[in-house]
Image (cartoon, rainbow, N blue to C red; front, side, top):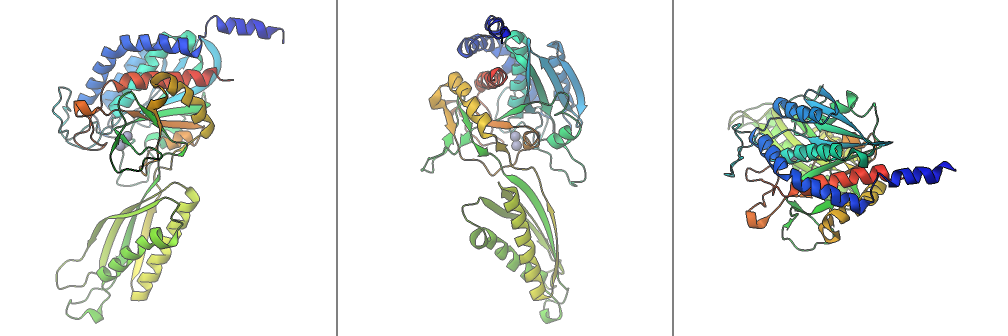
Length: 433
Ligand SMILES: [Zn+2]
Ligand SMILES: [Zn+2]
């Protein structure tokens, strides 16, 4: 016990109070800003598709090594993990940034437009990677303010849409390859660009832009369980003039499609979020032949894992009943995708004061979770996680287009907010008892 006052004295001489540290970091980030913009534009100009992030990963690894960090490359193909040891012993916290781009042709004519035809950073992962590098640089520069270890997870293949689901990829594969061990972090933070959000309590239909300089968060569910399914309905071929000799897979499929929508409207509690969307349908060969087979493809989105299992069962029951009633058969290949992100309530509440100090209370918005999917959840299944949104919109600059669209862009001022908010979240976490 006698050591305690000495220990406190020792700490107070090095680790600054939150507000003083914020001011110190803000000044450094202001100095770093031109370089952050340059890095973001470099990555934006050279986007790479999922599992092809060679150039981006090399850039990331070079920068981290130059900061004197312990760097491991080649995790989950092009993933990079780096360890920053702070000036004092303490907990470990992870910061995740995804690096891949999308098969979209960029339509915005900006000097940093994609030079890789048909590939674009339309989900802002160039911003995420740049913010991650910015946090690494800032904390490396102010190591004395870091009480513990920061683990950086630069992730490939968040956007991957593999033809087969035989092998893992992205975050799941990074976890399988040990990214969350040695050392195992005590918490993980991630952020995503967002031009638009649905604020809690908003009642109008207008788009709510999340501007550069703003942050948003959810408590609990943040993204959905994002699954895909493929259904084959098999009937019996016959001449179109004599349908009684066959089983028309198209008529059966039509009934099945309509009935599957009653899961949402009539068979589940409407207060439990659920989306069932059928996006593809193929069947038949000729106008005067009954289709022997129809294939349907779609997606199911939910927040709750047990509720999702119930929905899968209902889908089977409907498909079985309808096909049997008509003498047809079915097969369903249901693939569970990225699990829902569940933001840890205690971690969110402990982090919000940092956000409010950085951007002001009015610029930290609680929002309704999205039904989108994100594989950050594989990291936050291992340790408590907080995944928040970084505002990127700026109406005056015409930056107000949605993610995954050819006009998407981010107001680069968001880089400062991103680096400051993430760094404050990390330091507050490490300083907390
Ligand atoms: Zn995306
Ligand atoms: Zn994304």
